[in-house]
Image (cartoon, rainbow over all chains, first blue to last red; front, side, top):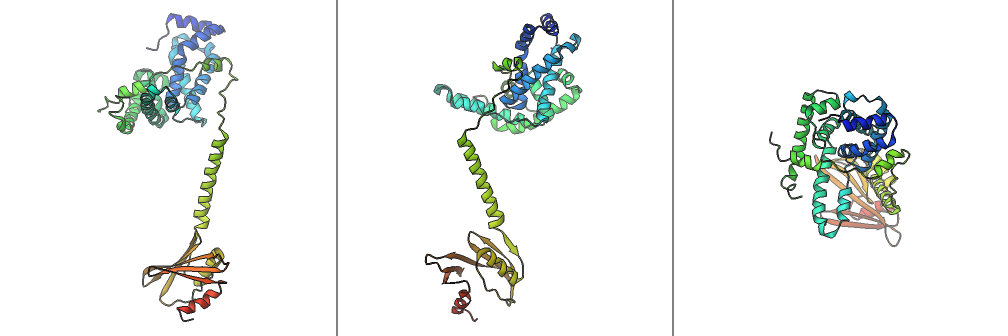
Length: 189
Length: 165
């Protein structure tokens, strides 16, 4: 649920007063979420770092304008989503990453095969997701990376739950077709 | 819809990951951007070499491998001579032959024509022999014919070996 607990509220109020330690606490609480959305959307760790950095700078710059009743996480999600979309619009690099494959190759010999297989599967899925149209891709990321409900996604994206369902359905059809070759492989990877 | 097999896969593969430690440093010091990944010189050289190869291939395809479409023997003759340095003595009005055009690739000239509605082609290879004279080679009935001449003009005379001048 996208609710603000009492601890978050205190931290946010401290951030609004300019408390840098409080901002560090806020950052630590949400950094994985922000980075993961950026990474799953962009498919590129370097792009994800840019997006995550920019998102937190926007949070820092706009935190005074945040109103608690709006729901901090929804507000944060909107910032990340818009930063992802802006980043792509600016034509920055968004490519599926090979980092895991490289890591796997250079990994300890005992786990090379296992890591290669896992990296290959993950790379495949990341590549396929990265090729989805932007709107569908974002819905997929919010659904599967964040586990959000249709209503929560709709609130973040500013559309109806029906639109979310429709985008997800279209994405599912594409993904099912493109992932079919991985069927039977993923269980072992 | 039957998709129960891939939804857990997506949820697993697209799961959250830990943000790199350096992210805080980048947020704390916004001036710090990721270092530009320096491409090794060898990679640059390989990339330039690949580009050059593609460029040469394009030139070969679009220039070296170009051709002319014409039914005019004079035009084809001039084109072949200009492109290959070979003067093919095409007759002004070859009886029963409709010229189509000519191609030049890898030092070989190919003149396309039709006889009675059937496609035909005359191939001429022109290259300098080791002795510096002109060498002309063509194939007919599965045989390769080669004429070695001092100049392209001598071909006219050499043709008298087989043809009425």
